[in-house]
Length: 322
Image (cartoon, rainbow, N blue to C red; front, side):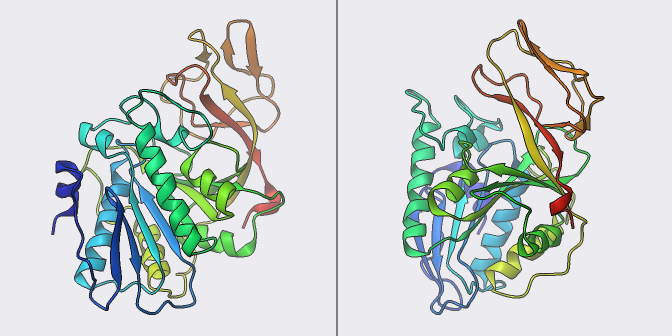
C-alpha cells in the first residue's frame, strides 16, 4: 500500500474496511476516514489532520506513516479516530492553495467560485459527524511554517476560556517536542479553532518545521510528535516531555487592508522575531503599527489578500510556562 501515491493520483484512495485487530474503517469523504475499534479504551477520541495547506508536506508524510502502521497492524487503535488529509488539489499542485487559503474558510464567510470552499465544507461536515458520535475529541491539526522560527516546533491553542494553560495540555505539548504555544481565542476561521469553538474540543494547530518538497525531510525530524500520536491512538501513557514549553498570548493582529500594506521586517525574518518598543512594524497607507514592549511577530506574510491577517503580534505569558 502506498497511500501517498494514491492521494497524489486521485480522490479514490481506499483503506481496508477492517484493520488487523478488528477496527472498522469508514470513508466519510475523499481522503477522510473514521476508524472505530471494536472495544474503545479509556482514552479520548482523536482527530488528526494534515495537508490543509498543500505545501506543508512533512505532516502529510507523518500521517501517511501512521495510516500505514494502522493498516499493517503495527499500530492498533484503541480509541475512535478521524484521519483527515486536507487540500488534495493543492498537494498535487505542490502549492499552498489554488484559490483561497483553506485554513481561513472555517468561519462564516462564503467564497463563491473558490475551489477550496467545497473542501472546507466537506471537512467541517466530517468533524461535525464525528463529534456527534464522540463528544469533545482531541484535534491535532498538523502544519509546517512558511519561514524559519526561533522555536522549530510550535503550536497554536484556540481556546474558549482565558487563564493559563493547564498541566495536562502542557505535558501533551512538551511531549510532542513543542517549544512554544500561542494561546488564542477560538474565533479564528481556522480548522482547529472551529473544532474548539463549535464542539468544545481541545484543539491545536501544530507547526512542525518549515514547508518543503515531498521527501526532503530528515528521517525522524518529528519523532517526538509521532511518538505522542502513536501513544494517543493506542491509548498508552504519554512519553516524557522532550521540550521546555514557552507560552505566548496574542496581543494584536496585523490585518492587511490594501495592497499598500508592507512589513518593515527583512524577507527572511524568523517567526518570534522581537522588536524594540516603539519600532515601526508595518504600515498600510496612513495606518502604522508600532511595537509595544515585549512584542514579537509570528506568521508575518504581506502576500495575503486584503482583509486577511498578515501577522500576529504576541507577548510572553509567564503564567503558562512549564
